[in-house]
Length: 430
Image 1 (cartoon, rainbow, N blue to C red):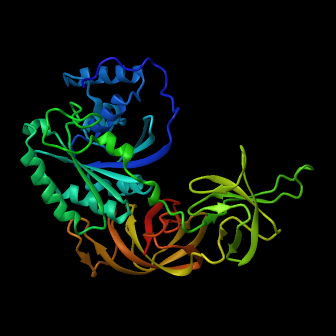
Image 2 (cartoon, rainbow, N blue to C red):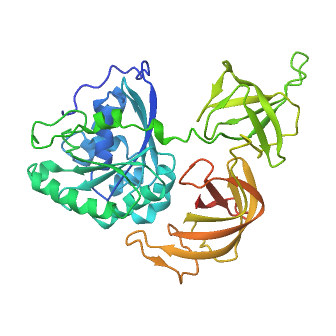
Image 3 (cartoon, rainbow, N blue to C red):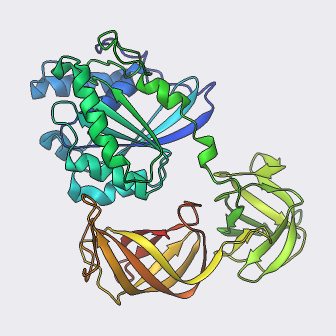
């Protein structure tokens, strides 16, 4: 399907959409990732007429000879000049079945930290492979990062099939080679789809030019992949963000605790415990701006009102008495280093975990991992920008954590340089 008349200039409506799915895209330079996202946005009528006109003008100025849909996503001028994706760009589209948020992440190794940022909240990772080049080092690295971030669903799009005459043997060879690498990683749901993003083959509709492919189109897969069970609904965790006291005559006795449900399900009448105090109570009501709820689940933002007037502050954690996170003063974690100032052993940082902060000292760098070969360098004495390593941290006050593999919300944290207030590391509790 070639670009033609766009939508009527009205913003797309979200009527009849239901589930929200977040997915991150990654690929090596010139694999066609931006073109694929542009194709999804165009074919689902998720762009404005003036946007398409702007892209058409830019395409003409570049001498592309066609409407280059990649320019819909390469929003930075530097990206357009260099022909690469540098920063994480978030794009939105919807179908009658689902809403989608795309994290368009950079492919180059020097922007690993950006990919970690964009993929950290994703339900699915989409990795592009150029059919002419096959599986590259960057392809393997992207899959490893998806595994590290516990993204349970991976889609490998073998792009530019039009440039290899839609040859099934090319697709089969890449599938076998990449599957061998994926067998070393903790990803169990992998789907391979042969596509041509430029021409739309197998992107929104099945392609007649690849009759040997028996699977679904990419969009059909995105609409039907089952992600609801990936979210942790077993472990109720509610980090308190704000204490609500209206102080009005009508609500002078009201005291609520506002925040976002990190995981699990909270219901009116549930017995709960507040950490670190250990005081218990029951949920009297679950309040929102629109009114009261009987139950709350992630990622709803609500205000909990308890039956008892107990001391609760920002940074406290509300959970179930028989299902508590670990109270930790020392944690082991995988950390992606995100600063140009390298990490050194015994350094001190501020750690932010959910709504709670503490001071953290690097007790030990256990190893640095080569994301291309999975080799563990136990002799490493620091982490440079974009490197990943396993650290042991000692904390000034306890954090209430779960293993990242079990609970991404309460198993993740960031490290902050106190002197600059910059985020220097993103960590996952082991």
